[in-house]
Length: 223
Image 1 (cartoon, rainbow, N blue to C red):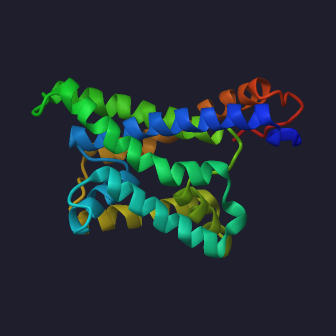
Image 2: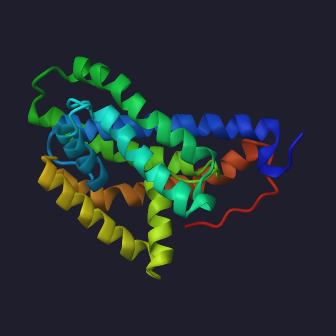
């Protein structure tokens, strides 16, 4: 049953790849937050959101779910074709995995990690975000809600995606500063180092996912 990317084998393989990518991404986001040296713009914004929403009560994972659901609702209304299986799974599970991983990471690094440990968190967090984000997108089942929103805004404003993404990141940083998210040196690391990891992972993993899913005939355009 099904064709191409939507045979049973392909669906199972691609969903597993998505969830592994989401879990790795969740570690990356939590690593940045717990390092407390600044975070990538979206993570910093969500960190600030966790401090101002009364029903969140400082829970970063719950704030991440709120942020993703808001983005999801927006693209559901204005850019429905941007929604895929990965969009749904990413929206409703990333924050939950952040909450699950947080106590494990704290147990590993202790309540007052040294600067060396915090730097290691930033390095591993950067790698995890690049690998995780590239990994789940390699499944070919769509992008996360904020990425879908960015695609819509770039098309609506007739801007190249990279230029709109710079504007979006700036908005996230300003919002983070207003709400109390941590903006520091690791914010620059997140902004400029995640992409160079994400691209190669996406390019290398996409044809492998097609092979594992039994879709060797499907082509993939490198980014």
